[in-house]
Image (cartoon, rainbow, N blue to C red; front, side, top):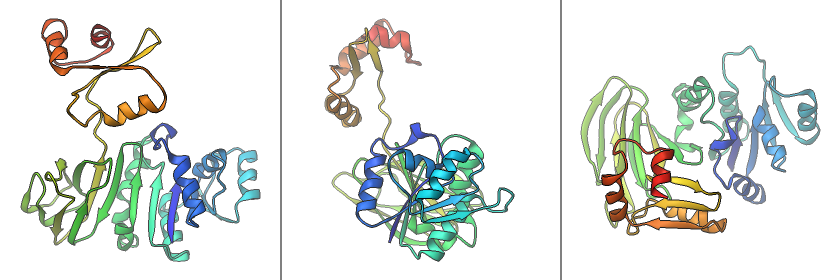
Length: 290
């Protein structure tokens, strides 16, 4: 069984199609879980969770009553506790529901202590065995986790860039057949190896290590361009017409029937040389480009 869980993190960091993801999961018979305020968010999306879990101390009585009247399985936690609601949710879905994989949304942004516990909770010895079945997803990133061993990293559509974060002391870490290889790295503190890529015409590469835990963020490249509203009529886009970095933005503009202009990079460079600053792009530079 697969699980799709929504936590109470900022809604502006949700994937754009989050409602569709949860509706499709519901239709497929997957388990839908709301954690604390995430339960209310699901109700507001028109999706009743199968399981709601948390201390619910941030909800109004009317909102909690709505959840209690609709959700079949509610697990209440004490606000004064050793484990967070996120950690309790992992224990519940893996130990009580015996699930195979867990996709967590709403786990990033907002309070930094909340984000850190969501990122680091799989280091808990009681949860570590579930690490490779968990992913954390927001609108730009998908983070998966690995325990020691040999792992093949598969290329995922829309996620061309990959980073590696050792969450604990690491022993004999190797990245093989990727654009940037690493051989026999040993480290006694957390370290990030960012912005790796798949080799051309390949769909996988290998990592292996003997001790520690690796978090692997796969991310959609931020569009390295100005994206502005010009006179309330146009979206202006500066991009390399031969590149792929702005394809997602272009698709977004076309889906919403927003007019835009592709600015040739050579022309943009000449404008920068003559009129714009090289170390910063802001409203003034965007206006000049427009």
